[in-house]
Image (tube, rainbow, N blue to C red; front, side, top):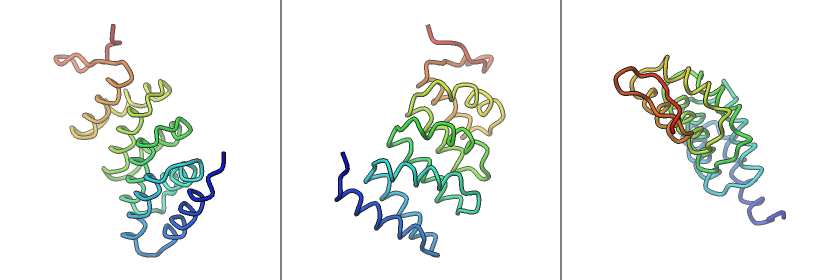
Length: 145
């Protein structure tokens, strides 16, 4: 069912995303995630796919997709694990754990293996949410029994 009030809010927020000021775009992404809905999810996916967008805006889009838990975002979040910087890959790993889709397992395993400590911790936690545990001594993924 279409919610005209939500669509109106989302449209207003989307216009804020066109602002040249990155702080306004950063805030707008958070608002979009709070409002939610189909149009918000599609817009947030577009933001994380936009390699020209501010890295914090992209990271916040990944964060909000995790909050919304829409599995349409999974392939886009998997690609975001390779985004430059720290924020987008970190938030993408967390979002994949929150969404809980097993399609993310292989990408998270690879990401955990090739990441620094902070992003590796996000990937390990996401894998735990997907049913994987890591052996402390070896760092090898083990299916949870």
